[in-house]
Amino acid sequence: MKTDRIQFAGDVPGIQVEMRVLRFAGTNATAPTAYLQSSLHGAELPGQAALHFLIPMLQKAADEGRIKGDITLVPQANPVASNQWQSHQHLGRFDFFSGVNFNRNFPLLEDFDTSALPQPDAPVSLDKRIKAMLVRLALKHEIVLDLHCDDESENYLYVHEDYAEDLRDLATALRSTAILAGDSTVSAAFEEACVNPLLHMKATDRDMRRRAVTTVEFRGLNDVNPATGLADAEGLYRFLVHRGVVVDASSQLGEPFNGPIAPFSRVEMIRAPQGGMVLYHVALGDIVKKDDLLAVIVPVPGEPEYDIKLYAPQAGRVLTHRSLRYLRRGDDVMKLIGDEPSVQAKPAGSLEA
Image 1 (cartoon, rainbow, N blue to C red):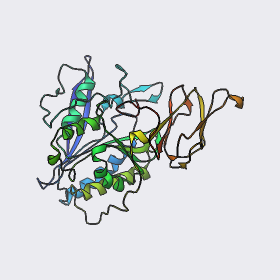
Image 2: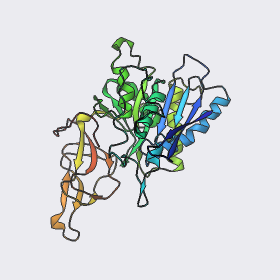
Image 3: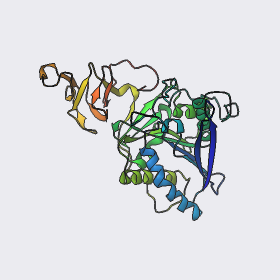
Image 4: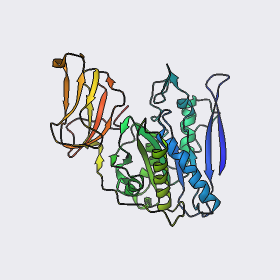
């Protein structure tokens, strides 16, 4: 394993940050190559835990000559977000200066030529230089996995709808429960930046048997422990073996994925009509019927006549909860994968800010 440390000057004198990039060189120039990153949102650590356990597996494979395709890993993809703390709370979803989600506004290229992207010392803001570097690192590879997590959730994937069926093997390897499929690059998330060149290729030139571009949601913010980290690492390893990046005759993909592949139009974003404490009446993974009680918002503790009950707008599966149990008016309370398209109008782009 080779370790590179990319230095970025801060936006003011006296500040510098470092991005650590780990590389395993493949032995077969025709084998698929892979890029994995985690913690683009600094406080999202399940993916970082997965890479922590995956790297020794890959080192063993490298020592035994079993890595066929080049592998690049960036366990802390956003050193700025990793350093964002406020009042003892680790944050890292939004840039403190602009207020913009760190997983937005990536450069959208129409091909795989990254030569025009800003270099680490370019006269542009640090967040733009970091985003440019991540795209530059990723677009060299056919497999690109951006490891995230939700607040509290099941394990699921975000995929461009054109390639959702091609990622069944990843969902199988990771034991994911659902695939959410979108069709836009409006928000310019990292995954969208990496899939955009593919969308500009001729359909006959897109060989998705070798490619995989997705956002992996490894459950929730607090699912950081040895058991889940190791299990997720084993899932990533199974996928790399299945796709021919690593050779391991003992690794098996497992039972085929049988969860829903749901377009964004089927995702019900249940929102709080008023602020207050939230009491959930359903667990993650529960199958609910239309009009089932999902949660109660308590704006006036001790006076239940003011409770606000939230009911399922349709039948479906509970995918996420909010980890914070005190909500503001308009906050997302949960995601429900409905059996039918939602009646809610949804703007193009990501489901959340």
